[in-house]
Length: 226
Image (cartoon, rainbow, N blue to C red; front, side, top):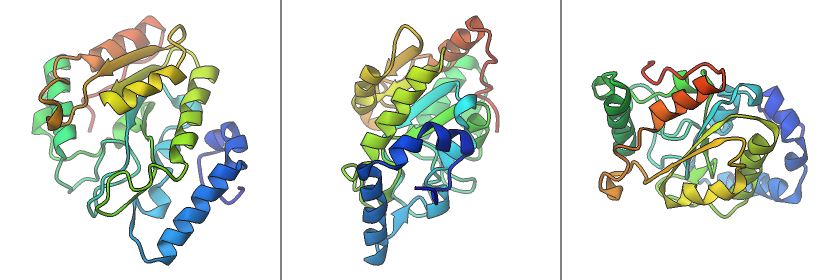
């Protein structure tokens, strides 16, 4: 599907996926939803924001979310991230608390939850489903997106070396089967949502990621940016 607007390196890596029937079905389904006047998040130009913000060749860390935020103005195509000016969601507040505890930078005083500066450093903020209907979590979970993003994870595992995969919560942890543990670091923890009752705290994934990157002669992530 040559009309897909996605960063060039990803377009090359995923060319075969874009031509498969399931991906054509995704596009057709979204067009049908829009024709029915349903509001879809994130807005069209941001559906592939994670890919456009972090080219394939630049990926060093993968943080996997489940699907986009469902409230107006929140979803921006980067997992866990919200635009500046939007209230920081509870899961992201807990991520910031863990970074502050783990690394020491005062993240809980941040005025916004825009994680673009992570993406620009090679943190691929991928949701398993790239779209959602307003107010309806997981409403596009079965339209083919999981097939697509599973292929994305597999491509990263197969074609790159020394990546860090952060898998939070039971849904994300199931994706470990797509990743070669001999080539990459897989970090698993409970979800940062308050519903997980604090199980995420103490995972130290952010310092562990940087230690692994340094050990593989890569630049650590500045988790305190922004």
